[in-house]
Image (cartoon, rainbow, N blue to C red; front, side, top):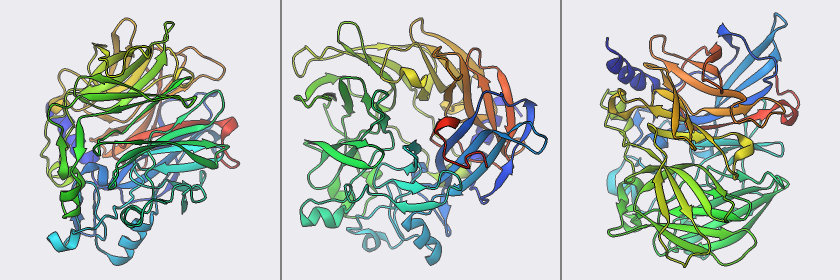
Length: 499
């Protein structure tokens, strides 16, 4: 079997459903656990793409499954070990569908059975809690962008509650809007202010009066809606950025047609490009000043690498730019082995001068490198000047543009260091600094790699300096590539974290 065919086979097999929830001390098959790497890696992503005999209509509709790797506890032999646990998020919809034995809710790419009458004006979408996970002020949240976060026990991963921050995320708008959307959306990409520890986030409200909602969460509890920015159309945005003086949002020339959605079409099937539209960039002053708006070429950026303010006060934003809103194979087609090409994703730099006139065009330039996604940087450089980005990438030989490698990209020299796992399929690389170090390459890269030959996944600990293997720990089963995760160092972990 040639490598290209093996990559495709691995990618298909990686998306088979996870049927087990278990705990295990992982077997180390290569290297050893670093003695000074201590804490928990949490990850989130879809664990299955079908339920009760019905295959979901899109990969982002899969049921959320959170995994945790407690690294640095002591094993039976007295040596540092890795303890693993996984659990599906018990959202209300997940529980009700399990009880009913059938699909009860629509989602972004999935309809209920029953055709037009089964989906007409069904505005309640299934909260799958499958996109990211964040630990903040002692609370662990599984995140989705269309509704409320879910509070989990950070040790057992038990689902505790659908969390609305003491009512702050309840929709208190007009009656019709409350009926259609009783909960306010909460993005899966919140940012922590390193100076204050406050959490910032946004919600893309796609109701009858579309708008952007900006949130600030202080002390891990008190959520405040700090701004409401009206939108002329329900445009899409998935990620945002935070610098010392700005919150930055890109709005892309893509909208969701609400009438077809209300008439029973899945929201993703009602997405359309705005003809002649441009990318709108909003610079939102954190001190409460007026919003500044700029323009860039039409595109779509699912994830941003980083943003910072340079010595001249310009805002520099690096993102994973695609030419247009991406499509993805339906899970049924994927599991049958039919894979469409993944669009090329170009790391792109935007330079914005806040002193320029509103509506001005910004400077765009390529940062080179391979097609890359799921970017991460050294945690201390988030919102500040940086040099290295860590991504999943597609090599020139990868079929269909599938991501089979981890890359370290030097954004100053545009040089790329590549670690190819083909035919394995790696997940998002999480950068963990060595304790006390601020060097952007002094630490480890944590990624979960699926190996089709064994139909199992493994946690890889890589040296951030050269992406060489430090340790490989074998999982007792496979998990799909998933979306996002975050590291919590041992001093910030809750009691019992190493169990």
